[in-house]
Length: 92
Length: 152
Image (cartoon, rainbow over all chains, first blue to last red; front, side, top):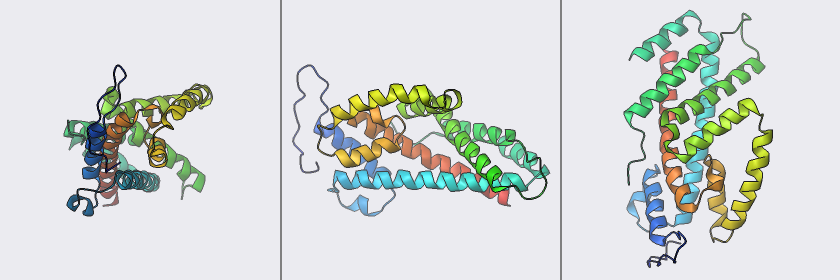
């Protein structure tokens, strides 16, 4: 997909997505990814960007799971300080 | 293209909603260390609260937040029975149409990860992915800072 740089003509009637549109979106995704290596090379393949995106989302999901578990344990142990902390945070 | 990063309003809205749902979680009745099942149940509720709060803070502007809110609502009401029947047939039709494209594997993986991704075209999917990823990162950041506050 990264080798096709020619502009494809939109077909009559139907909303065919142009290659350039997809490339723009993929490069936007690429910029969001935290790896430093992506900045240097311009020709990172779309497949790698998609793969990295999937990995990134999966790790974010895992982090949410871990944080939820930690919050659950913290909620169970703290008692009266709980309401005070939350009120404190809400007013910040 | 507009920025995908959630602005400070969305972040604040998410933080407020999430903290309010946290404060509503009932404190354990039994004294002493909570059972594993209790912790598990509360973990699920917290996780659900986090995702719903984020989706509500984003609002119905994005397809992924709409899909997520729908999924949460259906989980509460129908336990997924009716919803699965309707969406399963729609998914099959869309997947057959999308199989024509070359990069099936990676795109399908992405569809499964992004809420509502199964029925989007590739263009919409990539846009929604970018926004979803940025919102997830914000969600993690806020949750982490709450945990840090609690741990002090």
